[in-house]
View (cartoon, rainbow, N blue to C red):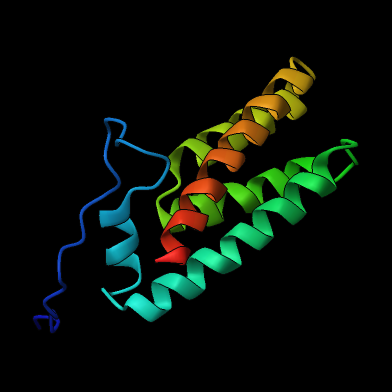
Length: 124
């Protein structure tokens, strides 16, 4: 008996090489199915979430690793790969106890860059 196979549309993975700018707009477009209104909504939600999570992580509470993990997933979803990488580095720093302040500073900078890019997109 042969199982029925459905044809799935191929979706490329995020780029292995860094993209120019803090947002991979092609990835964002794929994730929002090319819907401009959805793109605007997702970007606005991410910008708010990112600032809340960074503020919550500032004192390095017990759940800082989980907060960094949450930010990492959201960032990957919209194509903010520098934020995702910085959040992953902070997760590692928290887990190992090494360079937490440095990793947090890098994350804050990456979030600031992506939020500036989002502001510019939302103004248009």
